[in-house]
Length: 158
Image 1 (cartoon, helix red, strand yellow):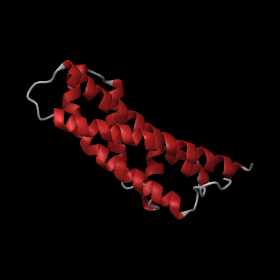
Image 2: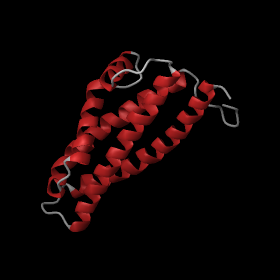
Image 3: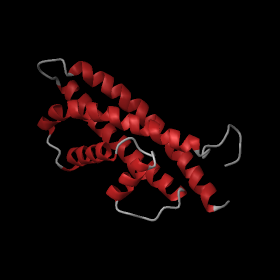
Image 4: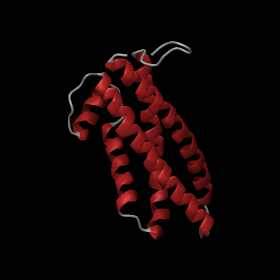
């Protein structure tokens, strides 16, 4: 199996994981939107917020660190700093917005590295807002992949 075929196979596997991650993140977003309408939060509400932020981080990592990087390798592009990769990816319509993806990565890092449980409810509206852009970018990337016929037909060999 040649190197591109292996990369395409890896991309398919990553996209399957990403799709599952997107599904659970959307369910958490829907749940947390309702919870945000409350004046006070229960322990279970806080757990839902925590779950949302974790799923947001996992989905954004899977997308930015796996899917986008695998696509980059399939394009035979040289390794460049992430910000440069995103800017070029936006120009070739691989991603929706480099700036929004950088915001998503910054929020993901804030959640992961500066975790203060009391701060989570304040982050939830931003997580929900940026999830919309994350999903939009994922759709742009899927269209990019489809336009290049990188996904196998059902039953076809990669």
